[in-house]
Length: 124
Length: 176
Image (cartoon, rainbow over all chains, first blue to last red):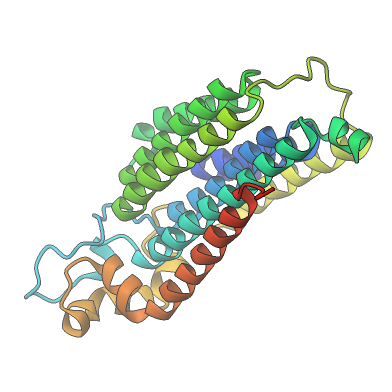
Protein backbone atom coordinates (compact mmCIF):
# COMPACT_ATOMS: atom_id res chain seq x y z
CA UNK A 1 0.00 0.00 0.00
CA UNK A 2 2.75 2.43 0.98
CA UNK A 3 4.76 1.26 -2.03
CA UNK A 4 1.85 1.92 -4.34
CA UNK A 5 1.29 5.41 -2.89
CA UNK A 6 4.95 6.37 -3.16
CA UNK A 7 4.98 5.02 -6.74
CA UNK A 8 2.09 7.36 -7.54
CA UNK A 9 3.72 10.38 -5.95
CA UNK A 10 6.99 9.74 -7.77
CA UNK A 11 4.98 10.09 -10.98
CA UNK A 12 3.02 13.36 -10.61
CA UNK A 13 2.40 13.43 -14.35
CA UNK A 14 0.55 10.13 -14.11
CA UNK A 15 -1.50 11.40 -11.17
CA UNK A 16 -2.51 14.51 -13.14
CA UNK A 17 -3.35 12.30 -16.12
CA UNK A 18 -5.59 10.02 -14.02
CA UNK A 19 -7.43 12.95 -12.42
CA UNK A 20 -8.10 14.79 -15.71
CA UNK A 21 -8.95 11.59 -17.61
CA UNK A 22 -11.47 10.32 -15.05
CA UNK A 23 -13.00 13.74 -14.45
CA UNK A 24 -13.46 14.35 -18.18
CA UNK A 25 -14.93 10.88 -18.65
CA UNK A 26 -17.29 11.48 -15.70
CA UNK A 27 -18.42 14.76 -17.28
CA UNK A 28 -19.11 12.95 -20.55
CA UNK A 29 -21.30 10.43 -18.75
CA UNK A 30 -23.23 12.59 -16.29
CA UNK A 31 -23.76 16.06 -17.79
CA UNK A 32 -26.84 16.77 -19.88
CA UNK A 33 -25.55 19.68 -21.94
CA UNK A 34 -23.99 18.51 -25.20
CA UNK A 35 -21.28 21.20 -25.32
CA UNK A 36 -20.30 20.27 -21.77
CA UNK A 37 -19.95 16.65 -22.90
CA UNK A 38 -17.65 17.77 -25.70
CA UNK A 39 -15.54 19.73 -23.22
CA UNK A 40 -15.19 16.47 -21.24
CA UNK A 41 -14.23 14.62 -24.43
CA UNK A 42 -11.56 17.20 -25.19
CA UNK A 43 -10.14 16.83 -21.67
CA UNK A 44 -9.96 13.02 -22.08
CA UNK A 45 -8.17 13.33 -25.43
CA UNK A 46 -5.58 15.83 -24.21
CA UNK A 47 -4.94 13.93 -20.97
CA UNK A 48 -4.07 10.74 -22.86
CA UNK A 49 -1.75 12.72 -25.14
CA UNK A 50 -0.21 14.30 -22.04
CA UNK A 51 0.53 10.81 -20.66
CA UNK A 52 2.19 9.72 -23.91
CA UNK A 53 4.38 12.83 -24.04
CA UNK A 54 5.38 12.33 -20.38
CA UNK A 55 6.73 8.89 -21.29
CA UNK A 56 8.97 10.42 -23.96
CA UNK A 57 10.85 12.69 -21.52
CA UNK A 58 14.38 11.71 -20.49
CA UNK A 59 16.30 13.04 -17.52
CA UNK A 60 18.83 15.66 -18.62
CA UNK A 61 17.79 15.43 -22.25
CA UNK A 62 17.10 18.31 -24.60
CA UNK A 63 14.57 18.80 -27.40
CA UNK A 64 14.89 16.34 -30.32
CA UNK A 65 16.61 18.79 -32.65
CA UNK A 66 20.20 17.76 -33.38
CA UNK A 67 22.75 20.19 -31.92
CA UNK A 68 25.52 19.09 -34.24
CA UNK A 69 25.09 17.40 -37.59
CA UNK A 70 28.67 16.18 -37.92
CA UNK A 71 29.35 14.39 -34.62
CA UNK A 72 27.75 11.01 -33.87
CA UNK A 73 24.48 11.36 -31.95
CA UNK A 74 24.11 10.21 -28.34
CA UNK A 75 20.50 9.00 -28.16
CA UNK A 76 20.33 9.53 -24.38
CA UNK A 77 20.84 13.29 -24.71
CA UNK A 78 17.72 13.91 -26.80
CA UNK A 79 14.09 13.31 -25.83
CA UNK A 80 12.39 10.35 -27.49
CA UNK A 81 10.94 11.74 -30.78
CA UNK A 82 8.56 8.88 -31.57
CA UNK A 83 5.74 9.70 -29.06
CA UNK A 84 5.97 13.33 -30.20
CA UNK A 85 5.24 12.34 -33.79
CA UNK A 86 2.37 10.05 -32.85
CA UNK A 87 0.80 12.68 -30.59
CA UNK A 88 1.11 15.43 -33.21
CA UNK A 89 -1.17 13.32 -35.38
CA UNK A 90 -3.47 12.58 -32.45
CA UNK A 91 -3.90 16.27 -31.51
CA UNK A 92 -4.91 17.31 -35.00
CA UNK A 93 -7.27 14.36 -35.45
CA UNK A 94 -8.72 15.01 -31.97
CA UNK A 95 -9.53 18.63 -32.81
CA UNK A 96 -11.03 17.53 -36.16
CA UNK A 97 -13.35 15.04 -34.42
CA UNK A 98 -14.28 17.70 -31.85
CA UNK A 99 -15.15 19.98 -34.77
CA UNK A 100 -17.48 17.32 -36.21
CA UNK A 101 -19.10 16.96 -32.77
CA UNK A 102 -19.62 20.72 -32.54
CA UNK A 103 -21.12 20.83 -36.04
CA UNK A 104 -23.51 18.05 -34.92
CA UNK A 105 -24.42 20.19 -31.88
CA UNK A 106 -25.20 23.12 -34.17
CA UNK A 107 -27.39 20.95 -36.41
CA UNK A 108 -29.22 19.51 -33.38
CA UNK A 109 -29.84 23.00 -31.99
CA UNK A 110 -31.30 24.20 -35.29
CA UNK A 111 -33.67 21.22 -35.43
CA UNK A 112 -34.72 20.87 -31.76
CA UNK A 113 -33.98 24.32 -30.28
CA UNK A 114 -32.04 23.05 -27.29
CA UNK A 115 -28.74 21.45 -26.34
CA UNK A 116 -30.15 19.70 -23.26
CA UNK A 117 -30.27 15.94 -23.73
CA UNK A 118 -33.62 15.40 -22.02
CA UNK A 119 -35.39 18.22 -23.87
CA UNK A 120 -34.12 16.75 -27.15
CA UNK A 121 -35.44 13.31 -26.17
CA UNK A 122 -38.84 14.84 -25.32
CA UNK A 123 -39.06 16.37 -28.79
CA UNK A 124 -37.95 13.27 -30.70
CA UNK B 1 14.89 17.26 -14.73
CA UNK B 2 13.41 17.58 -11.28
CA UNK B 3 9.71 17.38 -10.72
CA UNK B 4 9.77 20.28 -8.26
CA UNK B 5 9.74 22.79 -11.11
CA UNK B 6 6.94 20.98 -12.84
CA UNK B 7 4.48 20.78 -9.94
CA UNK B 8 3.18 24.41 -10.24
CA UNK B 9 2.47 23.86 -13.93
CA UNK B 10 0.63 20.61 -13.18
CA UNK B 11 -1.40 22.39 -10.47
CA UNK B 12 -2.28 25.15 -12.93
CA UNK B 13 -3.31 22.44 -15.40
CA UNK B 14 -5.63 20.83 -12.85
CA UNK B 15 -7.10 24.19 -11.80
CA UNK B 16 -7.89 25.28 -15.36
CA UNK B 17 -9.39 21.85 -16.15
CA UNK B 18 -11.53 22.10 -13.00
CA UNK B 19 -12.62 25.59 -14.05
CA UNK B 20 -13.61 24.39 -17.52
CA UNK B 21 -15.68 21.63 -15.92
CA UNK B 22 -17.29 23.48 -13.02
CA UNK B 23 -18.16 26.89 -14.50
CA UNK B 24 -21.86 27.15 -15.35
CA UNK B 25 -21.56 29.69 -18.17
CA UNK B 26 -20.45 27.76 -21.24
CA UNK B 27 -18.68 30.76 -22.78
CA UNK B 28 -16.38 31.09 -19.73
CA UNK B 29 -15.92 27.31 -19.65
CA UNK B 30 -14.70 27.31 -23.24
CA UNK B 31 -12.26 30.17 -22.58
CA UNK B 32 -10.95 28.31 -19.52
CA UNK B 33 -10.55 25.24 -21.75
CA UNK B 34 -8.38 27.38 -24.04
CA UNK B 35 -6.21 28.40 -21.08
CA UNK B 36 -6.02 24.70 -20.10
CA UNK B 37 -4.73 23.92 -23.59
CA UNK B 38 -2.15 26.67 -23.34
CA UNK B 39 -0.94 25.44 -19.92
CA UNK B 40 -0.70 21.96 -21.40
CA UNK B 41 1.52 23.28 -24.19
CA UNK B 42 3.73 24.94 -21.54
CA UNK B 43 4.07 21.58 -19.75
CA UNK B 44 4.99 19.89 -23.01
CA UNK B 45 7.60 22.52 -23.82
CA UNK B 46 8.99 21.86 -20.34
CA UNK B 47 9.14 18.12 -21.05
CA UNK B 48 11.16 18.72 -24.24
CA UNK B 49 8.34 18.20 -26.74
CA UNK B 50 8.50 21.57 -28.48
CA UNK B 51 6.80 20.46 -31.69
CA UNK B 52 3.85 19.05 -29.75
CA UNK B 53 3.71 22.26 -27.73
CA UNK B 54 3.52 24.37 -30.90
CA UNK B 55 0.75 22.24 -32.35
CA UNK B 56 -1.22 22.30 -29.11
CA UNK B 57 -0.88 26.09 -28.78
CA UNK B 58 -2.02 26.65 -32.37
CA UNK B 59 -4.56 23.87 -32.92
CA UNK B 60 -5.73 23.16 -29.35
CA UNK B 61 -5.71 26.59 -27.73
CA UNK B 62 -6.46 28.45 -30.97
CA UNK B 63 -8.54 26.46 -33.40
CA UNK B 64 -10.50 24.32 -30.91
CA UNK B 65 -11.46 27.40 -28.85
CA UNK B 66 -12.61 29.20 -32.00
CA UNK B 67 -14.69 26.18 -33.04
CA UNK B 68 -16.30 25.95 -29.58
CA UNK B 69 -17.02 29.71 -29.56
CA UNK B 70 -18.54 29.65 -33.06
CA UNK B 71 -20.85 26.82 -31.98
CA UNK B 72 -21.86 28.73 -28.85
CA UNK B 73 -22.59 31.89 -30.87
CA UNK B 74 -24.94 29.82 -33.03
CA UNK B 75 -26.61 28.02 -30.10
CA UNK B 76 -27.38 28.55 -26.42
CA UNK B 77 -24.39 29.90 -24.44
CA UNK B 78 -25.83 28.89 -21.06
CA UNK B 79 -26.14 25.54 -19.34
CA UNK B 80 -29.88 25.92 -18.64
CA UNK B 81 -30.08 23.05 -16.18
CA UNK B 82 -29.68 24.55 -12.72
CA UNK B 83 -30.06 21.36 -10.73
CA UNK B 84 -28.88 17.97 -11.90
CA UNK B 85 -30.26 14.66 -10.71
CA UNK B 86 -27.68 12.73 -8.65
CA UNK B 87 -25.48 10.35 -10.65
CA UNK B 88 -26.55 6.74 -10.84
CA UNK B 89 -25.16 4.02 -8.60
CA UNK B 90 -23.23 2.41 -11.45
CA UNK B 91 -21.38 5.67 -12.07
CA UNK B 92 -20.54 6.06 -8.40
CA UNK B 93 -19.11 2.52 -8.26
CA UNK B 94 -17.33 2.35 -11.62
CA UNK B 95 -15.40 5.64 -11.58
CA UNK B 96 -13.64 5.29 -8.18
CA UNK B 97 -12.87 1.65 -9.06
CA UNK B 98 -11.33 2.74 -12.37
CA UNK B 99 -9.30 5.42 -10.58
CA UNK B 100 -7.96 2.97 -7.98
CA UNK B 101 -7.06 0.48 -10.71
CA UNK B 102 -5.22 3.13 -12.74
CA UNK B 103 -3.29 4.38 -9.70
CA UNK B 104 -2.48 0.79 -8.68
CA UNK B 105 -0.92 0.28 -12.13
CA UNK B 106 1.46 3.21 -11.48
CA UNK B 107 3.81 0.81 -9.68
CA UNK B 108 4.53 -1.07 -12.90
CA UNK B 109 5.20 2.00 -15.04
CA UNK B 110 8.81 2.86 -15.84
CA UNK B 111 9.98 6.00 -14.04
CA UNK B 112 9.33 9.22 -15.91
CA UNK B 113 12.59 10.60 -17.24
CA UNK B 114 14.29 7.20 -17.27
CA UNK B 115 16.48 6.98 -20.42
CA UNK B 116 16.23 3.18 -20.35
CA UNK B 117 12.44 2.96 -20.25
CA UNK B 118 10.98 0.52 -22.80
CA UNK B 119 9.62 3.34 -24.95
CA UNK B 120 13.08 4.84 -25.40
CA UNK B 121 15.23 1.80 -26.20
CA UNK B 122 13.57 -0.13 -29.02
CA UNK B 123 13.55 1.95 -32.22
CA UNK B 124 13.76 5.57 -31.15
CA UNK B 125 17.61 5.58 -30.70
CA UNK B 126 18.06 4.46 -34.29
CA UNK B 127 15.74 7.25 -35.46
CA UNK B 128 17.83 9.74 -33.51
CA UNK B 129 21.17 8.37 -34.67
CA UNK B 130 20.42 7.85 -38.35
CA UNK B 131 17.91 10.55 -39.22
CA UNK B 132 20.50 13.10 -40.36
CA UNK B 133 22.28 10.62 -42.66
CA UNK B 134 18.95 9.44 -44.05
CA UNK B 135 16.98 12.65 -44.40
CA UNK B 136 19.37 15.61 -43.87
CA UNK B 137 16.97 17.27 -41.43
CA UNK B 138 18.28 18.31 -37.99
CA UNK B 139 14.77 18.17 -36.47
CA UNK B 140 14.18 14.47 -35.78
CA UNK B 141 10.44 14.93 -35.25
CA UNK B 142 10.09 16.41 -38.72
CA UNK B 143 12.15 13.67 -40.32
CA UNK B 144 10.08 10.92 -38.66
CA UNK B 145 6.78 12.67 -39.45
CA UNK B 146 7.53 13.53 -43.06
CA UNK B 147 9.91 10.75 -44.07
CA UNK B 148 9.91 7.52 -42.05
CA UNK B 149 6.21 7.67 -41.28
CA UNK B 150 4.98 9.82 -44.14
CA UNK B 151 2.25 7.32 -45.05
CA UNK B 152 0.77 7.79 -41.55
CA UNK B 153 0.75 11.53 -42.10
CA UNK B 154 -0.86 11.16 -45.51
CA UNK B 155 -3.68 9.02 -44.13
CA UNK B 156 -4.11 11.53 -41.30
CA UNK B 157 -4.85 14.20 -43.90
CA UNK B 158 -7.52 11.84 -45.27
CA UNK B 159 -9.10 11.78 -41.79
CA UNK B 160 -9.04 15.57 -41.57
CA UNK B 161 -10.48 15.86 -45.10
CA UNK B 162 -13.31 13.49 -44.10
CA UNK B 163 -14.10 15.49 -40.98
CA UNK B 164 -14.04 18.70 -43.04
CA UNK B 165 -16.57 17.22 -45.46
CA UNK B 166 -18.72 16.05 -42.53
CA UNK B 167 -18.69 19.55 -41.00
CA UNK B 168 -19.56 21.16 -44.34
CA UNK B 169 -22.48 18.77 -44.87
CA UNK B 170 -23.79 19.27 -41.34
CA UNK B 171 -23.55 23.07 -41.42
CA UNK B 172 -25.03 23.42 -44.92
CA UNK B 173 -28.07 25.67 -44.96
CA UNK B 174 -31.24 24.01 -46.12
CA UNK B 175 -31.85 25.18 -49.67
CA UNK B 176 -35.61 25.42 -49.16
